[in-house]
Length: 279
Image 1 (cartoon, rainbow, N blue to C red):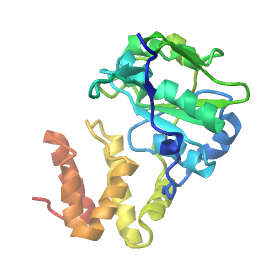
Image 2: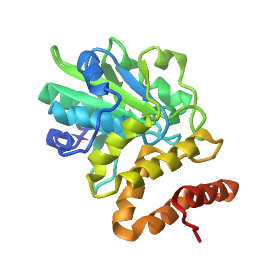
Image 3: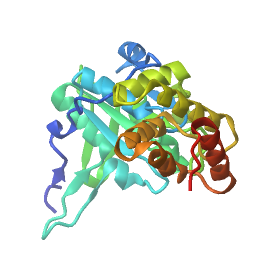
Image 4: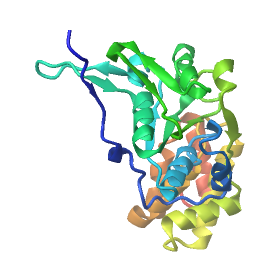
């Protein structure tokens, strides 16, 4: 048999996205400046608090390529390492995110590998990250007859994000994987911090009183035992929707995130806070 054809996207495909709107209310970036490329980091917290965005924004600020991968319980070895695909009369081996990140780092000098919702990986899939997460920094892929390893002086920063264990569809992290990471908790922002986020995202197009009321509503959903709580991502959406379909329309669109008694609670609080009765 001939040599295996190995393919991946060019390194410039992983250039960080510029112009991201990110307000660093948790002061994560000063911490990233100290630990980047020295310690693996997983951000742990509720949905919609800009965990992955914080890493992407740091990558943009530091002109560092970033390879991202959305984890799920369906991920298998081929998704992480690579697999053969059928293309005409050829069957090239297309690299997965881990060897891709190693090759991009070797070509550019450094790279970030960001594994989103890392605890959605099954325990078996988590085991596949051990070699890249410790001193070895190498990956043996016999399927393509290659060993991927960082060259001397090359830097790879292994990062990830995960929701807390109260969310469905997630697994506990293996102890051996957890021991290879620093676990950085990120919670919901305070009202003052979230106000800064909203102003950065939507500018001055919304009245201060409306922002205050939206935050009151969001914080009440977070304090109740609801199946869904309005995160900063949701409050940004509400303010964006106000600009396009008005306050009542925006609140009505957000009501669809709730079901049953939770939606009744949401409508009651909307009526109390805004004086609006939703259909």
